[in-house]
Amino acid sequence: MKIAMVGSGYVGLVSGACFADFGHDVVCIDKDQSKIDRLHEGIMPIYEPGLDSLVESNTRAGRLSFTTDLAEGIAGAGAIFIAVGTPSRRGDGHADLSFVKEVAREIGESLTNSAVVVTKSTVPVGTGDQVERILAESPAVRERGLTVAVVSNPEFLREGAAIGDFKRPDRIVIGAEDEFGREVMREVYRPLFLNESPILFTGRRTSELIKYAANAFLATKITFINEIAGLCEKVGANVQDVARGIGMDNRIGSKFLHAGPGYGGSCFPKDTLALLKTAEDFESPVRIVEAVVKVNDSRKRAMGRKVIDALGGMDAARGKRVAMLGLTFKPNTDDMRDSPAIAVAQTLADAGVEIAAFDPEGMEIAAPLMPEVEMKDDPYAAIEGADAVVIVTEWDVFRALDLSRVKQLTKAPVLVDLRNIYNPADVREAGFRYTSVGRV
Ligand code: NAD
Image (tube, rainbow, N blue to C red; front, side):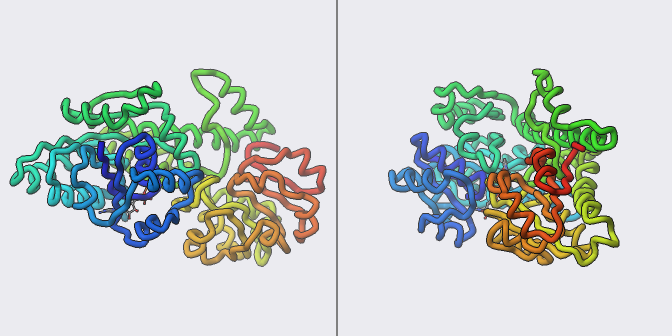
């Protein structure tokens, strides 16, 4: 089947390349000319492990191509995915649907064959109805009499493990209101259910809500263990053992119970906020999620204050130097959207602390977001002359630092580990003053 993917960012490019790898004929479309130019040259516009070779092999096989021309890209496609951004709208936290609606209008203008339009972007309940209305009013339906079904197919991949997640998903969710939509989606995902990936067919509104409920639940799990970590610090307990102890219960599960500096990234912060807005609009408050958003917001700056405490308090911190290791919201991505590192750096800068940093993939995007931070070429260059070293993101390269070299390079042997990647006894034995999260 020919598939068009409108929006070639983290989700669109990965999904498009994976669909091509399953044997479909895929065109990835993006309005960003420089992104498409780079893809034509074989240069990936984002960092995602394994993506370059997947794109290269499928492009070479003639199954994957790129264009900025939407009309050309969607011609003859049986399924047209919308995978553009849905960021928080400035001011009120609602999901900004302007990109999604713009794409729906463009599809309606130029479509010349019947097709299924699939929202893969994370969109609030009712967006499929809006897309359907836009298409029903468009020349494609009004003048050309084409059949267009609108389907919801939220994406659950994680950046950093996106290809594996897409090819072996825990589940595929499809919200369709008619048989045409369901039939085309069965065809699109046939290679996956041959693989026995569970597929859930449901209504479109339910499907849209599943995505927000999933992200809000995961954000709640993280925030829950973060608050338990705070309590552990006060009572002298160990949060990693608490997480293990509760996670062994199958009803709870061991994943997403790692205490840290708070969730960030391009999804959880905006999706939890958007869910609150939907709940408010429908007068059905989700108070647990309201609390999660508040707790997580305050946690990020609290992590900055944790570093200031390790430097000896506000007065002592002024003029001192901190090395931040890791800036992206999690390892194996260059995504800096809503990364906790931004709030940590701001809190430190507000307290008059100088900051040097190293991140394996995120520095180019981070630099303009964090003008107060001096970017360095490797971890040890960032560490040199620091009064404290802070691990903000658990990239593998920070898991086995040469602690004696770190000690020699720093002014004071202070290590703040916001990801609990070191064993407290080992680090203390190496002569460091060590602070982590939820462990004493
Ligand atoms: P992104 O910003 O990386 O990519 C969006 C792309 O869409 C950009 O390249 C942009 O140029 C393009 N675009 C915008 N308007 C366009 C138009 N009119 N025509 C063609 N292209 C256009 O965003 P992303 O991270 O891939 O997220 C896309 C959606 O998927 C969002 O709704 C997000 O919430 C959701 N999602 C993201 C993830 C993730 O891990 N990033 C996971 C699951 C779901």
